[in-house]
Image (cartoon, rainbow, N blue to C red; front, side, top):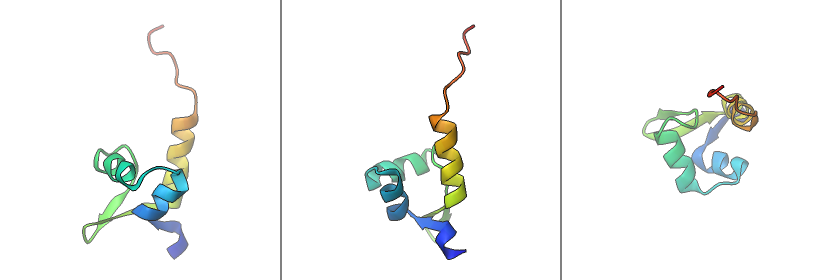
Length: 63
C-alpha cells in the first residue's frame, strides 16, 4: 500500500516534470493530490487516471 502513495518528488520524477511544476499543478488542483501535515501526497492510481484523461483527445465543444 505504501508504494501506492507518492511524494511530490516521486510524482515529478514519474511525470518527468520539474518539482516546482508539480507543486504548482497540485496547488491549482490540476494534479490530483492531498496534503498530509503540510506535505503533498498522491495516489498512484489517481495520477495514472489523470494521465489517461489528459492524454485522451479533447472533444470539439464548438460544434
